[in-house]
Amino acid sequence: MPEISIVILTKNAGKRFKKVLNAVFNQEIDKEFEVIIIDSGSKDKTLKIARQFPVAKILEIQPEDFDHGKTRNLAVILSKGKYIVFLTQDALPSNNQWLKNLITPLSDDKVAATFSRQIPYRSSNLFQQYFQFFLYPRKEKTALLGEFFFSNVSSAIKKEILEKIKFPEDLPMSEDQAWAKQILEANYKIVYCPLSTVFHSHNYNFWTNFKRNFDSGMSLEKLGLIKKSHFWRKAPRYFFGEIWFLIKRRLIFFILYLPFMFIYEFFRFLGFWLGMHYKFLPLSWRKRFSLHKKNLE
Image (cartoon, rainbow, N blue to C red; front, side, top):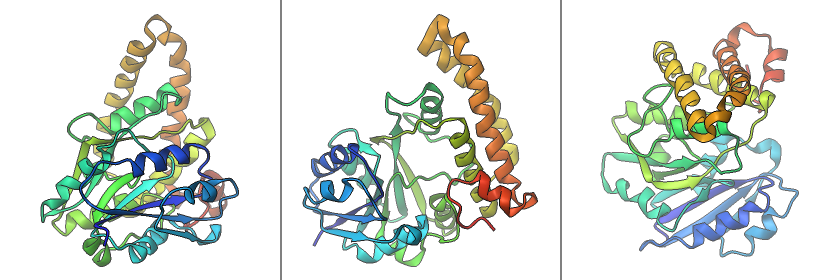
């Protein structure tokens, strides 16, 4: 009987997915684990790649049936492990200690979940790189939005707790932070594991950056997770930190990046601000501004 169930949700995972599975199956840990894949309509070679590995279960669902919370709740039912690890298809464990370092804190009875540090791929743009470094520091956790920060990009959760407190199924995204709020209010702990690292980042263009942050702002506002005073206190630190990040990365050329930085961050914060005030926007605007198009009422 596996002690750990690693769940990967997929859709058109691409060539990198083989590297992800290689990294997963090469983990050094003295606990048996199984890998479960739930695919929502891949048209590329995702399933072919998955079948090259000793994956315990592959479940195919219709794209319209996918939901960040609902599909993860389904994974809990399919899993045999005492611990359930969620890993996104584009999150690449950086070494063979990723799983061990992620699971270890769960031996504490009060710890319900853990999550990894995310390191940006070198191919990501500088603005997204800084965003990742800001949210996922090498040591202590400091979140831009408040104390309920948690990420299912790479996380581990005790199954017995997930059976009692499920992921919400009515959000376009941020189901992980909604769940984290319930867990902390139930007096459990969530541990950030900076020694458990995965490569994960995206190269969003201006409009996609806007849309993703619109969904984030809307989801967090629905949950009552945005402490606006905390957010605005952190914002100047974020901007000045990003300028210093550009200076260190590009030295005398950093000035050439500043106009792009201001435009990129304008789209990020405008999207987030509009998401926070989604109630004042007509449904047609919400659909235009959202990446996910579901649960926008």
